[in-house]
Image 1 (cartoon, helix red, strand yellow):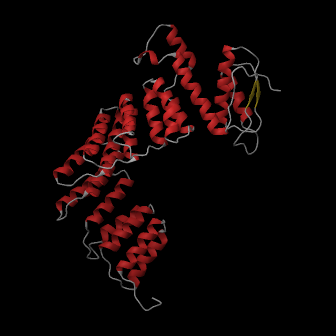
Image 2 (spheres, rainbow, N blue to C red):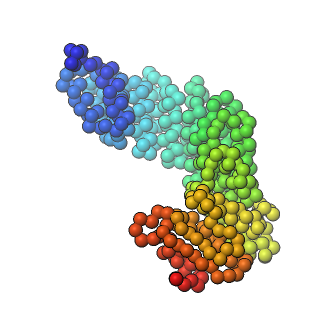
Image 3 (cartoon, rainbow, N blue to C red):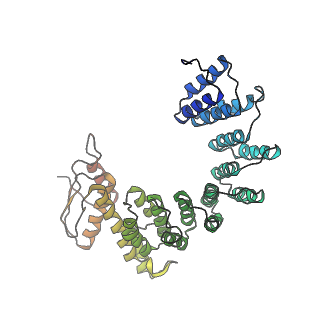
Length: 390
């Protein structure tokens, strides 16, 4: 305007989109009001940008209002309008609205594209409608719309969610879709790999998790597994009591992938990890688990000890405890690390009975009163062990 050039709809749409990305709701509203003030003729591009901006700002009501007012402004919704509307329904987990919009596209003179189908599939994922998601994935090919890796990823995720919510066999479809995406020559992504691994966890299908891991050195060599990938594989193995494979994963694959064991790793493994006493009792009674000799008290204990020691070293940068020590120094540890170190020391003291001096000091995340002393005392009380403060 300083140059006596009046911005048109194209300029406004670009600025509105940028403001929406930054979550600047008031600015977007102001720009739309300004267009009316200066009588800038609007079009579908501007209104689509405004809808998308309001959705990104979390103001879904304003986004719907723009869609409903299009007819008043004599602007005809285009495919991007419908796709944007469906994205708002996904945010609300309103799968009926997403599928209704897809049907609206079909009944118009426009044809749904890969974004349309993928968004509808994602809406189904959020409410665990995995069968509907698979149907949409198959239907789009009948309509000569080629699924991309995002479509496959959304469908695989829907199958994984379905198995999580109702224990159905949808995990098998997830793995089948993963293989199908590879056969079609699509470039696989880390999120897609993680969704397939999630299906393995839910179904306790540890063999498939190992197969997927082996493919990382073959057909999936261009996929970079992240820490989530490694944690999911670990969870699949521990849920099936495959302690030997799980220990190998921790000792070798984590290091090869550049992953450090953290709290999320420990939580992934700890869900299925039995207490040492329970594992020993099970072996003493001569019982065998479905996975055979690998699930022995010794295997569980070796895995558990390595996991805790590595977690502590990753957290505080030093070894926590050596066998036979009479002093356990917890200085500078976080409370989770301190509890793991204490458990290691107590396990060792059971094999070599002795008095143990526990030095708590100031915890890693303590800002006022030390957290470790209270946390350690609570743990000893829970274990019904005699302790005396000095």
